[in-house]
Amino acid sequence: MNPFAYQRASAPDEAVRAGAARGAKFLGGGTNLVDLMKYNVEHPATLVDVNHIGLDKVEEAGGGVRIGASVRNSDLANNPTIVQNYPLLSQALLAGASAQLRNLATTGGNLLQRPRCYYFTDTAFPACNKREPGSGCAAINGYQRLHAVLGQTDEGAKSPHTCIAINPSDMNVALHALGATVEVVGPKGKRSIAVGEFHRLVGKDPSAETTLRPGELIVAVTLPPAKFAKNSWYQKVRDRQSYAFAVVSVAAGLELEGGTIRSAGLALGGVAHKPWRVEAAEKALVGQHAGQESFRKAAELVMAGAKGYEHNNFKIERAKQSVVRALTLAAKGVQA
Amino acid sequence: MQAIKQVGILRVIAAIFLHSESAFSYYPYLTVKCEVSVSPCTDVDDLEDGITVSPLEREISRRSFLAASGVVSAGIAAGLPRALAEPASAGSLAPQMLSVTLSINKEKRQLSVDTRTTLLDLLRENLDLTGSKKGCDHGQCGACTVLLDGRRVNSCLTLAVAAQGAEITTIEGLGTPEHMHAAQTAFLEHDGFQCGYCTPGQICSAVALVDEVKRGELSQVSFESGTLSHPAITEREIKERMSGNICRCGAYPNIVAAVRALTMQGSAGGAA
Image (tube, rainbow over all chains, first blue to last red; front, top):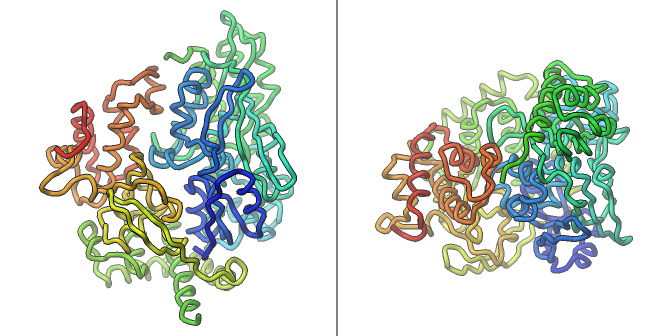
């Protein structure tokens, strides 16, 4: 780990001022950042601690809810309003990491969680466009079991654009299905970003996972009024039953009237550089009977255009099955 | 300054060795062994309680690993110049020392720490509280679990400077051999360990688990069983809630039994 200065901010504006310094990074729970610093993947000159700037509340707002950026994953998952109105978010959070890590990890930090591609986190591999822009991609011809099958940039191992890393978060998948908004403050003021625009695909630039601008600090996440309180499910498929990243995950929410779908929220984790949400698939569910036929059709629409590799080809069919399962369990209903 | 640079270079080389091995190893223990051999600040005596490895064995395992993999060697050759150049770009900054006040096991301590020091290293290397163990050092095993304001956290990912203002409780603060905490008694009674290396983390975790259950906190299993209000603590619930603590001996059945006994005691706080 390289030497760094540490500064504890006491208010958001103070944090933004300190965060404007060259090489400064914001410190939340540190579960990802400190880990990557140990691997020498991240080397900030200054850490600005944003755990004590008054962003630790969950409040009802605008018919929905506003979640402070430093609310811990464990507190958010167990917040009565979230359990009652947004059980999908609670379930996704509890599917991630361990109790210890959830006690540290923050809402803002989880949004910024970096990919867990082994070729990114291990500096012994010289080629990683995300870590060393222009160096190529070691994953594409390597072991890609946990890598992307949708929306990836694949121009060959030597291309500076190639990257098949995925967003490893569970929370983010639920936030995409729920249509969350991310509130940020930066040197140039405040702005709100729809979560779908907040996370980005690789395109020609593998270095960044979000559209956050330099020096911007996440202050809150807002959720629209709850539609899926009664019918939602987070389905996570992984190599062991707990404490492992998703091979494939699905956040599904249904608004039902009798057996008919009035609206749907559907996002996938473990398949792309950002949580994968296809509006056409959600729309195709509207007005349909909640059953295997419409679920299977939605699954095909979500996974359209998927391209797998030697070790992750299985994900494509697995993801479709998981979509059907998540929607089936969502339709069955959450019991409280 | 020269001396600092040399230590830095050694650390980089050590880091490359470690990374290469962890990437190609299916055995987390091997990584632990290697860490013992290269880390200048690990309490070897303490580690040997859990893992007995001679220095020669460690050396052989490292060499055979490197010899076995051309890819690893190539990675090192290519990685080295870049890694060595790194301190110039990332830190023209010298090590930063900060004065901090930490409350550990109800005792206030004023300390001067390098900002890079994790809470785990501070406890073990500076304060001689070697009960908290270093397993993976990356939040993947739970051996370093301590209580921060009563909540379980991985001390290996917590920076000491960021823990200011919190009340830290380690295994040493829970109980003594004469006056054990109920959780320690439960692990003894149910033989909830073999080598004992992960045990302090398991016990700290179990203590926090009991409080979480009392507060009615949920787990992903609560969703599967459809009980979102004060779920009953079944064996499945315990396994899920303890999943952040890995036991390489595989003493899980007895660990579950110990935690189960503890949750059934109703009030599990304080010394037994």
